Picture 1 (cartoon, rainbow, N blue to C red):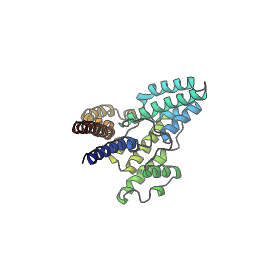
Picture 2 (picture 1 turned 180 degrees about the horizontal axis):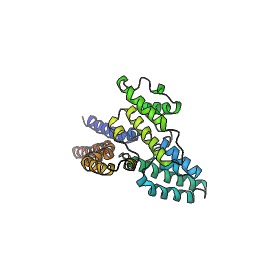
Picture 3 (picture 1 turned 135 degrees about the horizontal axis):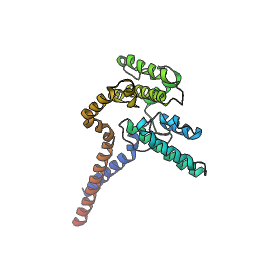
Picture 4 (picture 1 turned 90 degrees about the vertical axis):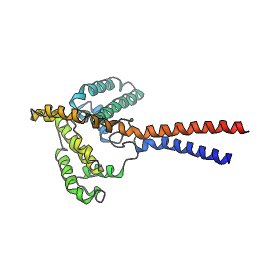
Amino acid sequence: MKKRGKSKIVGMLLVAMAIFLTMPLFASAHCDTMDGPTAADGLKALETGNINHALIWVTETDEPEITEAFENALKVRNMSPEAQELADRYFLENLVRIHRAGEGAAYTGLKPSGTPIDEIVLAADESILVGNLSPLEGMVPTEKMPELTERFEKAMSLKNYDVNDVAAGRAYVEAYVQFFHFAEGDEAHADAHATDPHAAEATDPHAAEQASATKVVDAPTEAIPASFPLLPWVLAGVFAFSTVLLFIVHLKKGHRHQ
């Protein structure tokens, strides 16, 4: 009985460890990976010295912060291969972090190249690349195809923007992200996403007032998406801690009966 009890506790401990080891696989694996479009454009900005490649992924409000990170990276990246690796990582980490914050998403670090990505995300990327929705065939419910097609066509119409026209680039990124979220089945996030909140203010004098009112009303719910991805980590931590504690208690009881 004692051995069986110990085996059960050890098994629970191993399950907790497995949860921790596999948790990164459940993280968002597209814009927060080295294989994602955000990091790709960030590298292009560093290699060409043109920050506009990266600015399209952040809002106008966040431009100063990402510009400072870009300039700091450029100052040291040519000193040595090691310095370049560190500088590039520093800039890309900041770019992805700020981009995700703009989407109301949690940042759990920049995942390495080769991180598993959901097949529907890969198919959506392939659709943008080839210029049609054939890669997504059979992966999206039929009733959602008309709206998906509309979002796809909008993204494609904005794709060939001038790199020095940051506003046009942000408009493409917004359409691109909305298309992706809808393809993934995340309609709420697709509709809520806005790359540049100042764009509407430029064309509608009442947009700023309306946006402000919306933020006040929606403030409690907007906080949920940013913290919600951390919930599995918290639960895993609680489970692991409880398991270790039970294991220690069980060992102590075992020593008392010996």
